[in-house]
Structures are given as C-alpha cells and as structure tokens.
Amino acid sequence: MRPARNFQNGPDEAFSSSSSLLSTALAFLCMLGIGGTIFHMLTPGGLLEAIIASAWETHPGVAALTVLGLVAAGRIAKTHLESYDRPNTNAFWYLFQGLGVYFAYRLITMGTL
Image 1 (cartoon, rainbow, N blue to C red):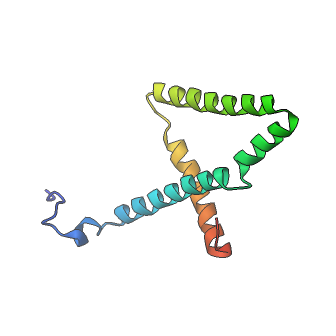
Image 2: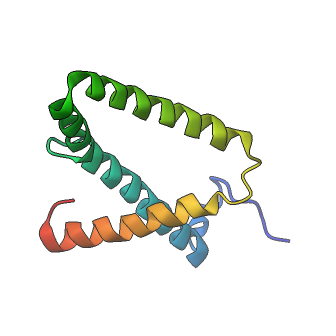
C-alpha cells in the first residue's frame, strides 16, 4: 500500500509523478485560456466594446437593451449550467485549454496576448 502524500513525505515525492505535472500544465493552460478570453473581452478596443459601440451608434436605447440582453443571457446560462448534473463538463476544460495553447503561442511569438 502506498503511503498518503503529506508534508512528511516531502515536496519532491508529491510532484514526482508525471501525471501531477501534466495536470498542473493543463490547469495552467486552462487558466491562460480563461484569462486571455477575459482580457480580449474587456480590453479597450475589445469585443465587448465593439458590440456596445455598434449598438450605441444605432441608438442609445438599443445599446441599453444590448447590455441588458448580455446580462440576462449570462444569468440564464449560469442557472442552466447549474441545473445539470454536469456529465459533460470536460468540454469547457478542453475549450479553454485549446484557447490557452493559442494564447501561449501568441505570448511566446508576439510577446502579448
């Protein structure tokens, strides 16, 4: 029987398996994907600003309805996702890990997200 991992076993033994390192790398890619997506949505000149600006040019009332629609869609999506037993939550991990690979490539080649 394998001993439990704790502070007495030492940090070298806790991270000695390749699966721990792979899990850490995949979690980092997922965080990079989520962070990069949020960055591109909220940065000046980002996607969210473009959506609201085009609605504002049409009419300020359309812009207000667009913002309300985005907030309502977020709330509906949140409650809809919370109601599932989550059999396919890996799809979100894979999506954001793929985006993390893309943003890591951009970060390495261009120096920015």
